[in-house]
Length: 137
Image (tube, rainbow, N blue to C red):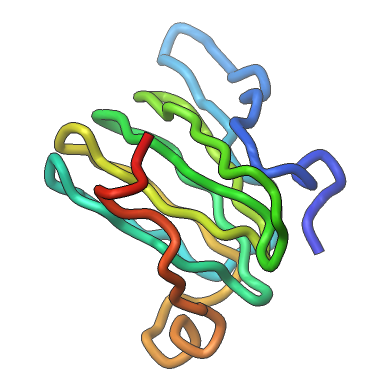
């Protein structure tokens, strides 16, 4: 289970970093996790369009930006859109429909609770027809 401060799927306020004459250390995730992935997406492409049964992930934007669409799985909730920019940290919990539209080439670091080997990932991921160019807003 994730820490209470990450219950909501939203942009996360980064904790204070540590700075001295050598530079800065910026904490991102202090939870038990099994995967760290680097993903580079081309401009005008979609990713995700799924939800996870048990997995959660943090996304830290190293370069670029994207539109993030989400709502609670199996709900009639309105779809929410957030713009996620360089140096933003985004959290997505389990049972959250989510999709990302990359408006420019974007590089992200994804920190996940579950391993990201193909078998584990596919068993936990449910693909849905959630967002596309026809309903993008």
